[in-house]
Image 1 (tube, helix red, strand yellow):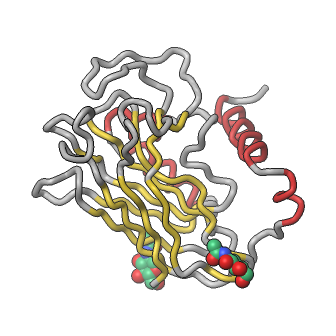
Image 2: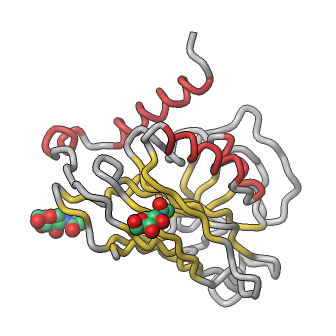
Length: 228
Ligand SMILES: *[C@@H]1O[C@H](CO)[C@@H](O)[C@H](O)[C@H]1NC(C)=O
Ligand SMILES: *[C@@H]1O[C@H](CO)[C@@H](O)[C@H](O)[C@H]1NC(C)=O
């Protein structure tokens, strides 16, 4: 009998395999970077009345960011997969407690080389600032994932998933991208301030289309990882 956890792991593995073009799977050798480089990972948030005139509320903010360097055996979140209890909490409430517990377990098992959290400063603005945390890769743990709740919202978060920091046998000096806006699939609200409506059963994690509410053609910022 499969446990819920093993079904989830199998689903994530199947989704991860399906997401790779078959030619890339066959042609790209596994990364072989050695050493334990440190990266400063920054989330540059961009959400204001000026940038999002039709999808902003005065209480707009982002929850503490969580960033991890990990092996292919760990998944923080993945489109078409299902939210873990930790990601459900991050997406719905911004709480990082359950996700942190899970990261510590994967770290103890050798699948997360390091992880960190960073909270907004005590002074506003909370929706246009930059948060930075340091994580260290290791041989075999060269994937980068991160997340932060778009708040208030039903279950929407921003982040990046499974970004490869090892190019062949060389650690990248820098990597960057836009912060993806994602629906965790656990709450059915459709507006930023909607009352909680649990989605039962949950639906798959889904990245918002560029012109879906609340993006409306505008992103929520960028991330950058710089080797130090
Ligand atoms: C990363 O490595 C540096 C240097 O060894 C160390 O000071 C730092 O605490 C490490 N950070 C984490 C999150 O493990
Ligand atoms: C990876 O390495 C190859 C070969 O050195 C190089 O051409 C390519 O630009 C590198 N990719 C990245 C993302 O740095």
